[in-house]
Length: 560
Image 1: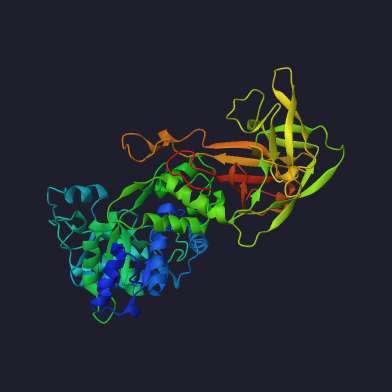
Image 2: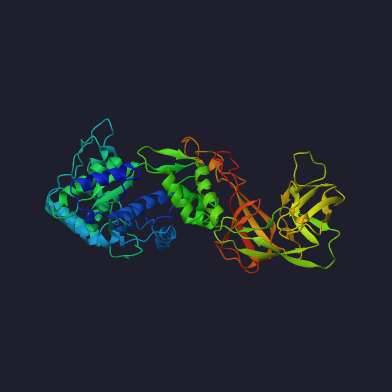
């Protein structure tokens, strides 16, 4: 770790441990997702934190799946998580699963029972909740708390063998029913679940609770620093108590430390709520580009670099706060500005006829791909007599501040000629169907003639109609109209869903995009950044709008 940079409080903890003699070679981190949904932007920050520490300290980072609840977990989610972590640019040292340790966890639980540290409780869940007390009132002992070791061992083995229905028995740690921290009031270690597990099949009928499996899994793997979000702070006492019962001083003892969750405005990041959006049809899938999932951001055209830069910008804090989504969009825009080729597309077309251009002629003009490139590259774009331009780029009656095409004024067609508006043709409803213009034959961009250097106030984009490729363009807005849809607990977050979060339009793009592949990213000049969607094919191009050229919500100004 370089001392030059300012350390966040997690790094300060690690540095302090190293100063106290903890061997740097024993540093080990982990990212521990539960495979019950797709990862979201909050997970992206945790991924960047853990894997970033691994890179900074040259320490291994495990990807460990907390697969202790087969009722909600699927292989699909495992595969999606692995894809997301890899896409973000990180590689794990080992792929592990809590289910790898089911036998060891069971064996330790048996030792707990033999040492009088755990017992089988046969109360209903409702009765257990009542006897647990409240934050201001101590709990009362379960009537089964003083079962004999022999009876507990017998019942626990029968639970394991599948002899009892779900909900009839649980294994509880025997700690303290008067503890101030309610999590220490004899927490459940195992429950009965007759569910098929995506890795262990039907081998187990009992499954460990998160609090029991998590710290012990960290211990088995030799994790030095177990980093969790702030809601796990009350769990730290229990994490340490479980470790106290099995800790061998010759091994690395994990240290749990907590950082604040960074919530994002106009989004929800609860996997339960994200699943609701999918299952109830508010979005098309987990990777719908309006979702806050990593796969949704990838499909929308966000880049791994942008997400990593976002995580670095917001940093690690001890206090939860709401980050404006405009900051994420700024990071996306900043990266795409460097890497996305500039191309021409028209999304609200009106026909432009250049009346003095030779009938049946065409020419291929040179256009730069991206002015940010270190070594400039170029492509050819076709030009003809009939073009599409944006309807907003023409006004029949315009004021002096309108610098695009009007009747009697000149503008430059990007990478092409200067044209002058001459007349319009309208339909029976008075809607303009054609604009007629003339061009200055000597004004072609880059031709080296004096006319080509002529300055006009406006430049507009276009596509040649005979060469234009029709495309479906999906324009996205914020999924929620409220800045903090989770903020009002009295209102269902779905009440804030934006009914106009998706608009599908037909546009026309230059022919160079015909060979595009899914996830290819472009700047449609003067319109924004767009990404080829996975639904795209040789027969039908489909683009997703990633982000505008500027922050349309006027929160963050970015230089383009």
